[in-house]
Length: 213
Image (cartoon, rainbow, N blue to C red; front, side, top):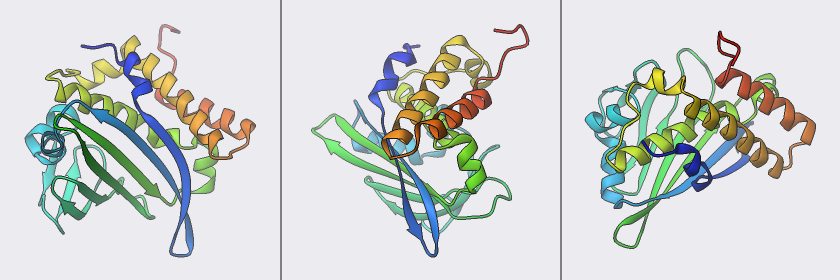
């Protein structure tokens, strides 16, 4: 397994907002380049067998207008599917109400590289945003992009639970939380609010171990 800490700076992060009807939605954007063709990246993101190898098992009617469900995670409707450039889905966690969509955009860069962009747009309760900020979903998406990159190189994190408990993953999630804090502050958020959100996100993703480590 490659050192994922070395890859964290390969991801560009942006935080913003936009109007969704009469509500304000929060946006996060992740961008990185993979050493793979757009067709290969598209296939890795849409083929159920491959998705299960780097993300989570997925079920459903996986076509435009169909529904999907990631095991133990989000589900929703496939809103746009334009091979090999654009995939847009609604993103619903359990019974959580409110608007939430994820869009993946792929842009070929030469013959063997692909610019990958993932944008998550959601209406977030103010108290939740104040507590966690963009890192609430941003850290998870950082891990997802690392997992996809490893898969495209023919590598694997193996057992996900064991991996996320490792020192490597804990260091990565801590650093990820900090970098989402930096993106949050760059969007105009006050420094004290950013610090509070980073603290909440880090505590959620990297709780103290039973041995106190």
